[in-house]
Image (cartoon, rainbow, N blue to C red; front, side, top):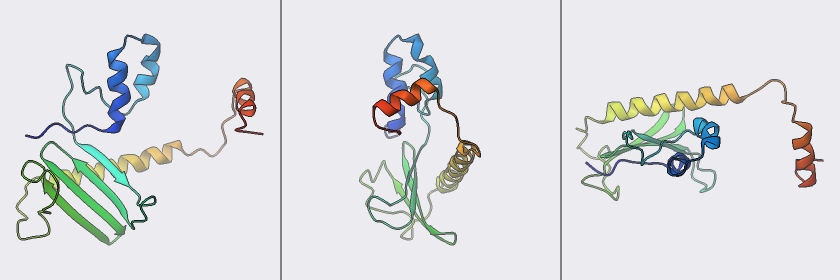
Length: 153
């Protein structure tokens, strides 16, 4: 098996796990990542997404990486989805898409596809939860600090 995948969101929990700072427990409880150096760390699939805005590439590109597999789902529209699957153990540079040729025997595909769909739905739910009908009132002291820094008028 390849090295367990980690993500940039794992950096904060991992760093906070190295220091003894109970006052940061609230921050740690809000972090999405995992402490990869913790004794109870368990490998889990890593979800990634790219809108293509910065690179000028059309379509939303989603990925799921496990120790052995990397799955891509590129969505150009509701009915135009292209998939790629790579075995990271035998093809660490992702040069041979297993779904492009005759070798479509990868039994990992249904589980990776299911995980990806669950992650997309979770992200959509989070986005809806963050939307608010009413703007939140800022603390007056915070407002003054933001004004002094030129962020608000």
